[in-house]
Image (tube, rainbow, N blue to C red; front, top):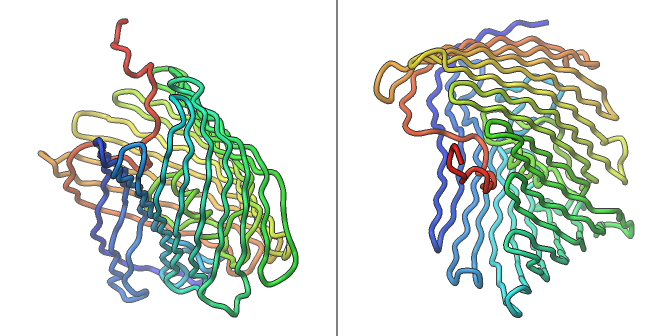
Length: 403
């Protein structure tokens, strides 16, 4: 095994914005950095992730325009280390209008349209899509609704030689409820996929579940799961929305063919004034009906602990276990660990020391490696930062302490 040493300088920014007004609602989260490799082992690069959503209400609750964007990195080959030679940027942008018409006080019809653009830095997987949606929504109460929805999407790739264009249809019922401690979103229905290059058609059940439960003032449980047709770019965007923005490449292999996407993520967070502990388990399975040799399954277990040791010093511990099973060419297991200390030097300035460890054991000759990284960083910060989109507000959080 060849050993590579490299010195890196990096400048970056982390930010989160939550803006709400009568006409604009925006939720932006980013963790971006520019890395320069001083020994010239690799070319300089931009790293990090960004997820953003903005809704402009030209006529509130009648005519609104939506923008979403997801930026990050994916691996060209998931069996070799994540370096600039094996890592590329991806961006998934979506925009479109929503029109809503009310029929009485409890019923409304919503018509929406979306244009999406997927852009890869190197891979020839750039694509665009047009979609339309029709929904009949019945407000069961002030916090519960039931809707019947139909959605149609057409995906076209820039490279015609790929012969990968397809059409996707969905019809489903959606229930959404917000209680004092629980937020529930459930979609159940039927989905169909038509490949334009052949007469083959795929279909099956459609399921999406998004549940968040406030178990106590300091503990939250989340479940995100589903079964749907997807492609590599849209799956990247939906997974990033669920897991948050951070510096790191998304796991898995990028493919041009659409697939049946089965996934489930269970998360638990315990947060107090000085300590926060988070545990999660995620399962992701991608099944290619036309090319089963592309099938892949990933299991990820992770834990993070942060602790304010004093008014100036904080400790962060993190770790994950990743097991990936590819129908071809093989499998790998990866262990990651992080230890960090942060000192507040005064005002908004802080200094951090961080150690990162990664160990990969794979079936292929070049798939096994060990990586050690040591970081010394200085930061200027202001306010509390998030690494994930804003979650729902629970009524129990609005109850004054002692009541």
